[in-house]
Image 1 (cartoon, helix red, strand yellow):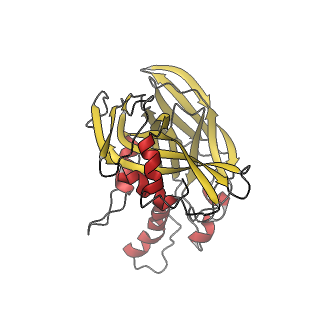
Image 2 (tube, rainbow, N blue to C red; image 1 turned 30 degrees about the vertical axis):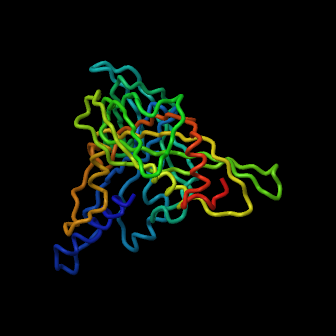
Image 3 (cartoon, rainbow, N blue to C red; image 1 turned 90 degrees about the vertical axis):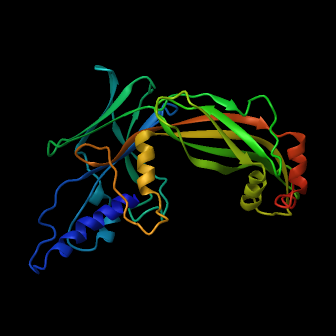
Length: 331
C-alpha cells in the first residue's frame, strides 16, 4: 500500500510542478487506474485478490483514502482466474467478493477495519500456469496478469526425526534443493513453548516466537534442482528468545519443539521486493515494478515448506536454563 500512496501523490502534484498556469485543473486528466495485488499458493484452499482503483478529486486526498468508495469498484468488475496447461484452458474459477475485518488502524492511510476482497475456492496445481482476467463491466476495460506457481522442493537438513542442538559459539547447517520457479528464500525457526501460571497450574497457554534466520537467499535461476547450504549461529536462537520473551516471575515455561518454515518467492515477487526495499545509499530513487497489463500492482506466487515438530536435545534444554539471554525466562 506504500507504493500506491506514493503513486497517488505523484498523480496529485506532478502537474503543479510542470506548469505555472494558475487556471490549470489538476483533475482534468483523470483516468481509471486499476491496482491489483495477489499471491497464489497451492497450499491454500482459497485465493484472495485485492483490487482497488487510484482516485483523484478536489480536496484532501488523505480524507478520500478513508472513504471505501474512493478506491473500490462497487459491482463493476468481473474477475476470473484461469488455469492453463500450455495452450489448453483447463479450468476457469469465477471470483466473488467478501468483506474481511482484519485490518488494523495504522496499517496504512486507507480505510479500516473492513476490506473488500475478491476470492475463489480453487485447488491450484503447480504444473499449470494461472492467468488473471478482470473486466470492468461499466467501461469495458480489461486488466490481465499471469504467473506460474512455485513448486514443492526438498529440505535435506534438518532431518525430521533427529533432535536439534543450538550450540552457543557454533554454527548449524540448513540445506535444501531449490524449487522450480522459486527465486528468493526465507527461513523462520518457530519455537513453541508452554507457559503455566504458578498461582494456578491449571492455567496453561501454548505460545511461540519466530526467529527470522534469513530472508534474502536467492537461487541462481528459477529452474530448480540447485543444492543450497546455509550456516547460522546457535547463539542466534538464545538471542531471539531473550529479546522476544519477557521475563515473568509469575509463570513457569517449558520448551516444546521448533518448526523450520521455508518461504519461497517467485521471480516477480522477488523483483517487487527488491525495488520496494529501503535504500541504504545516497541514491534514494527506486524504479517501480508492476506485472499487471492495463493496471499496476503484482500478481505472483509463493510457497511455504515446513519441517515441523523438531525436538530440542538435552544440551539445548539445559542451555536455556543457564544462557545469559534466557536463564531468567523460567525454562
